[in-house]
Image 1: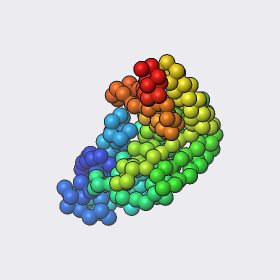
Image 2 (image 1 turned 180 degrees about the horizontal axis):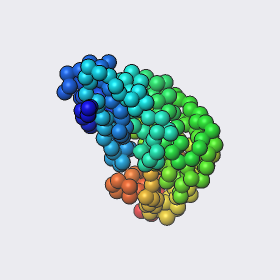
Image 3 (image 1 turned 135 degrees about the vertical axis):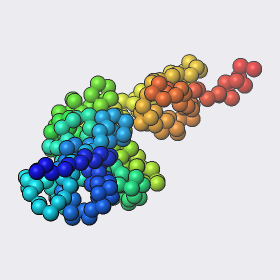
Image 4 (image 1 turned 30 degrees about the vertical axis):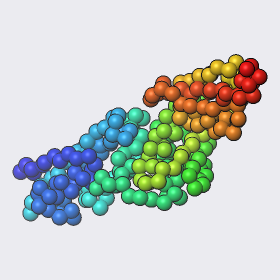
Length: 267
């Protein structure tokens, strides 16, 4: 005798199970199914999204399901383990980013820091094995330091991969917070070295703008790099800074301030 089977699809396995319960008018404890696809939202729903799919065996008076293939609802976990997440382009499931209702729960800074650490682990593990990730947090910033793994791959050309990791982690952390917190991800001290280079560059460009009396433009630059130069030159009385452009091609311009004493001399 053939046992009728139905398939249900949703964004997550948990939602697919709930949908099956509603349509079949069954309690969760009476629903037997196997997971065909766990599904994933990809990276913030932009890349590599897949729906979850389950196959439900319609219950009858004779329960002859194969226990190796049919899972009771209590045994299913909605979060994927790293071994179940084979696609490197899909580092984290949507359950890790938002609640099943689609409304983000507000969390404290320590909770956000721990959440970001777990998220970063999932993403980095898909790229290279990592020994550990250290974190520190203050009132408006969370810092993560990746220990171990292939630092060259994690940093990427001109720090582009590291910048992407930082962007994703910051988005994940602030997705559950009303008050935005800055996030910094560092690998092998790269951020500290880059910050030193940016401070030196800012000083040299400020000297050039002041000596020549003309604006000097640097870029395109990331928001984080622009911020370093803005903060470095903020106390400098000789120049002022301003970001120009839009999107990824946004640049930073250093303007020399007008010197009244020299103007009076020329008169």
